[in-house]
Image (cartoon, rainbow, N blue to C red; front, side, top):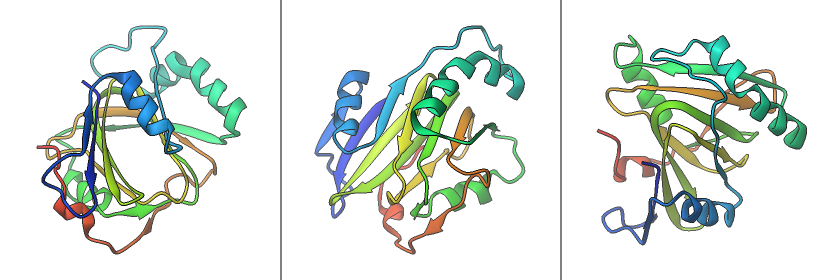
Length: 180
């Protein structure tokens, strides 16, 4: 179940807000300029969706975003617990960073935890199947895929280079809850 939990950026022990209702999550995030939507595939993708099938199933939604926002490229990423670089990748994504473009992800299956550092708070968004999140350019954030990752997501980019991070050097991510 998708969830939003908000903490003070000085106290990682007591949430100041928590919601699992998609409309409540959307309202809170939209107020901060973060896009959150629920999408549906137009066909069954099976147990281990292949990138081409994923893109075909969601092309109508991708096309809408491209028309609205001018995005230039997209691809599919899958991460499984048996991935040989899962520990190194998790560590990299857990470091607070920003991007010069929006970070747009749509979860086709599985889950991941986006953590945004905004206005004196840490906003943790548990994204699951059918969730789209767009983190605005320049927003300090980190991502936790868990110690046993399992997700497939569509990544949508403003530039053809894809994922380019600028690490902040802040260790704030170390203080906040992570996925198991």
